[in-house]
Length: 314
Image (cartoon, rainbow, N blue to C red; front, side, top):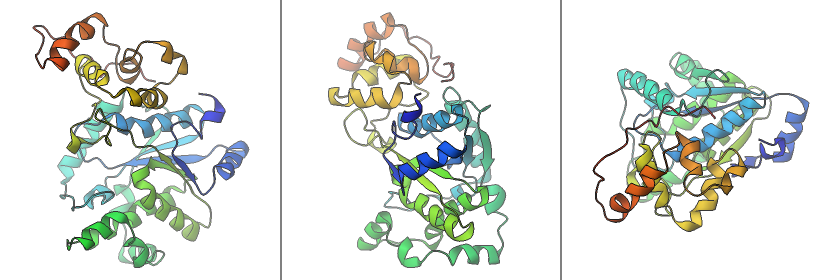
């Protein structure tokens, strides 16, 4: 990737200033991270936007931390949710981490990143530590978040442990003493809490880079509940079919977000994309089966075996 694209491509916003961050990066390599709560289930293409951005920084020589939220997942992230999350067990957490690594391994080169778990420090916090962190952020600020406001206006409950989530995520920035945090636009509130904690507790700036939310096959925000996802562990046939169903107006955005090399845009859609996501399907098979499966709704007589997790690392 061109150096001038590191802070522009796959980027929605940089706070407080992209110019300041660029200036810092011109003077030295930075430490950055993105956190992922191991909640389990299938990961979709939307998850890969931040992962690809992490790898861009790693390949540019910056110190990249891939953080599993083994502590924050015990609370559950209330971002953009109108209901509380179900609590998770330690056994589920460990199984989900293994599954996450399996699904993202074609994209993330784990030799270039440091893997950490915030349960290593969050579960060891003492009462005085929690009070110190909580004293840095006002409760008024916490209750300004949109998901809490919606639930309160509906007369629904906001549990106290949910209000702790932004503080706990924010404390990760303090412990790891990072220069930059990456996350989706839905994580902006949490990441800015981390910026405030870093400034107040480590007396230095932390930058926030948000990556755009991707629209699904139906033009709505990609989410499991909407049924419009393209999952990372789909078979080549399923991935091809769903990519063929993507609205025409979304195709340029998909190219921009998911292709590493813009020269691939010259290749026919969607052959450029599946090859770059996980594995290149043989054009003859998916193309031959697409009309019967995705236009008529009938399965082909023979299905190719899935190789979707054996792609080359990007």
